[in-house]
Image 1 (cartoon, rainbow, N blue to C red):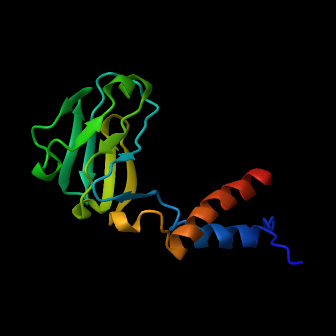
Image 2 (image 1 turned 90 degrees about the vertical axis):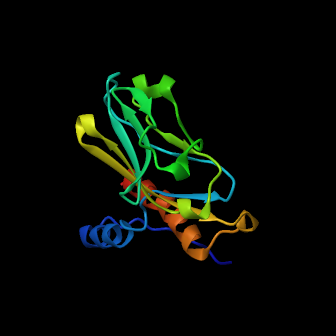
Amino acid sequence: RSHVAISCFLHEKWYILLSSLFSVPLQVLIVGYVGDSVVLPCSSELNTEDITVHWRHNDTLKVYDIINGKVSVEEQDSVYKNRTESFPQSYKTGNFSLKLNNLQYNDTGNYTCHITNELLIHTMEILVKDEKDHGTQSRTEKIVALLSVLIPLCIYVY
């Protein structure tokens, strides 16, 4: 019989090696499919009602703004018109997540949530796939998913 064992290395050199090898691929990656919706997470410890939050795509496209606790889409890039929504009832608890509807291929890329009141920037990446790819997962995606569970588990155990 063959056994699969996962070892958590306590030795300092191994921990540093493992954490340096796997720190980059474990960034937030959100996979969505053409026509579907995704929720981009963004939260803050601040629960002030006059908070300002800017959502941007690839640093330039204006996706969504919350100015002094109020939704502001006047300067929103036209490709996002009528496709974005937030959760205003959750602003008081520090939830500034954004729902992006009717995903398109050009939505693929890096997104930032900049909470100006605390100089905090959350970053994430969206990968938009064809709906026929729904249910398939690349080898890299499977490895990253496995490591994202195992590394925190190893840290918790030790």
